[in-house]
Length: 612
Image 1 (tube, one colour):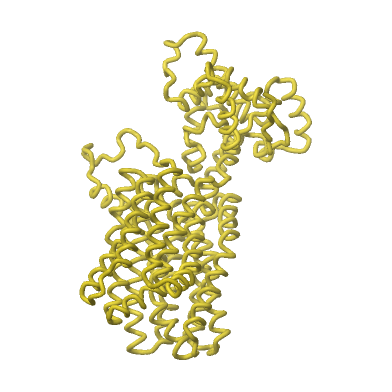
Image 2 (tube, one colour):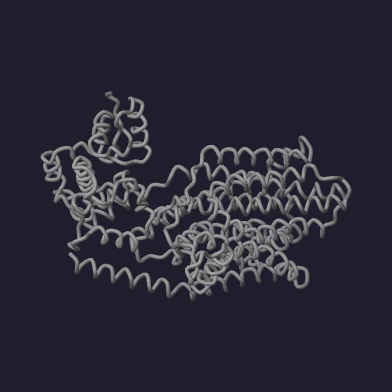
């Protein structure tokens, strides 16, 4: 079967036949033997999708030595390992690419039985056994034929990661192979992006339509405020239970049931009665359902993206959440307004409800579960009894809140929510009453800021991942703090009315959002994930969401009172002051973590040098 699969790593090609022969000879556990020809094509698809490369030069030692001699004049040391070391797909079950460097080093040392700083073919047999759970672990109880296959698989693994041709895998080669596999972003981010885009578009649709729908049935402004607050309160109440459910039942159920609950809420708006009292209760219940559905979807999507992210692509993997939110709030209001004008105020809610049901069906059909199995003994309390979900959550929150890094990033999330919640009672009122903006002009100002943020999000996430991968001692907190300071300065200039005209005010408004999009938003979730263990991440994301939702409520209430009692410019100045305080607090609380990280990296370098 002469079908070529392109190998982009070294511009060579291999045939499916050759690849099939390798798997036949080295790894019968893939289920090749005795299967018909279509199995070959399935293997080719798996080979291509996973990006794993088995080079022709590894078939015989002569060609390997010749190529190594040719390349050694151009590539040396770590650069050679980066270019030639490849992590076989047969080791994917070990989840090596998801490990932090400390955990990865500990795993390497565990396989390096004789502590000589390298893994030989004999030691790599344990790698093969760990990667394939159904192999018999006691080598003395298996047949000579299976022993030969084990040894052949181990030798193939060593050849795959051996960059300098010494038939051993050193730490630099092992790490380079894992890093190479950990750098690309998984294709599974795209279905998640679609789900979150529909979710945030639905929230955006409500912005221009819900006030008209509420006023149309005779509700007051205060009642409309209570309806809006019901979603935030529902999210606050649902964040922790949603995270617990995602940890217990998996991420996929949350990505299916969350949109379904949100669809019910959207349908509730469209089917609400016209009586003011019944309409008010119906709107509050419907918006609360939307809030619960949003909390479930955010919990599932956040943990799903965390599961498929690695330390080297975390910011780029998390970027779809930000991009979907920006695109949803940019597209939702004009789409909702157009549909409402053309077909009626209820139709946008029907359309959004149907779209949410489609995303639930898409998640059910196309998204595999990513929650990894717990190891034996996890989830038990100190007295070795199984801990309940509530006890586990409380214990995790207590542990995390003692960490200075978590305190700092939680404060940033709270302040970001407070600033977001204050826009309706500060910025919108100022531009409409002082600068004379119309409703469409105010909308264009927000659209301009969203477009600017969307334009810089991808390069910002790329830079964030490069920043921490180039030098392991670099910390994402070093990027967050300047962004907070720039945003606070731009907000303060708006509050001080340094440029009391439309164009400069809009430019400062966009500048504050650009600072957030470039330095703060791309690094918040990756910094939080980097600062917690895998077991804590569900509750860490719930803590961040709760801090932000609480900030939205607090900002709307407190800064609204300042705006009404003192003045709108003074309320904007208070917003800038809160941002500045958050920046100072964040720097103070994360400085110790940055120092420890730098010290640990220097100690690792010393240990590595001694081993060499």
